[in-house]
Image (cartoon, rainbow, N blue to C red; front, side, top):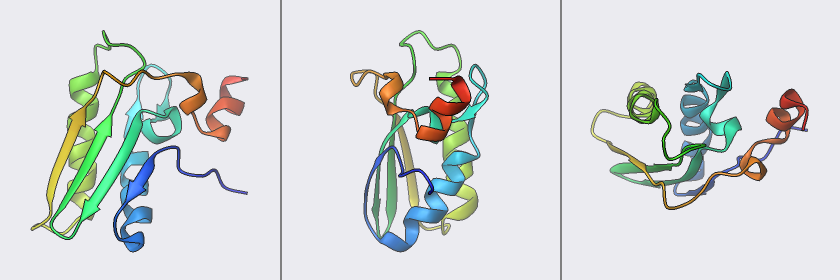
Length: 111
């Protein structure tokens, strides 16, 4: 059975799969897992003309935070229509915990 998406999603259900797949292409270099499986994607809100993604990091001092934000934006840009605005926001006020990880990521990490 596949994991549930470890982020909240609002919007057209037809966009969930391509958005999630694009975000799964972005890999946290410290864990060698996708930002989705790591639980770094807090939420995705899709509207007819925009997508807003909220990310957190495993640490407020994450040295690759800006890189992951930009990689997420680029991954979405490859799958979304050109007229759709993309906003990827870093939200460090919502703390990451291992509970946010997907079941498969926890198994890979031995948790």
